[in-house]
Length: 201
Ligand code: ZN
Image 1: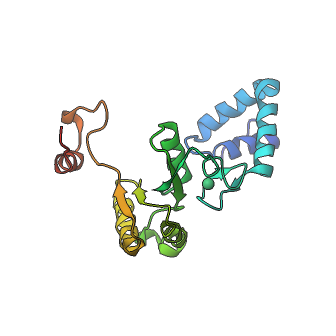
Image 2 (image 1 turned 90 degrees about the horizontal axis):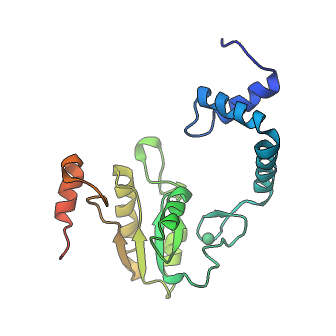
């Protein structure tokens, strides 16, 4: 067992920080020390921000985004295009697309991707709600912005089948050469997908 170098309160802080993604025990210790040193400038505001987040954060009942209001900021923005729904697996993907200003459409967060091996089935995803939204006459296109993994593509095929009768156009993100990418460094799967999905110049 590791020897404790600080009192139980500080050890608890370190243990909690170590549960954050990207932080191991070592960097959690460093983060805790940094917070303690910057008690007034950082630790107190962080604690206050966490408290507000606990009280106010909720899941948007329309799209599944996380926000301090329901419906969320994206769903209530009148400049968004109501004819497009961008389907993502996770809120992190929604936020990534928003950071890139990649779309002006609405969103739908599935909550996960289908993964039979991990026991994640259609009932664990918000697929029924998506199908219902797709039947809204305002909606004309569903963009599947899912991971280019086996699970992501399995989910995309499953949803595409279900949306057949909704009378909407179903599209998915292109697979191919990343912006700034050099062909020599790409894996074979990406290269062959890019060749198959070539577009007119
Ligand atoms: Zn929303």
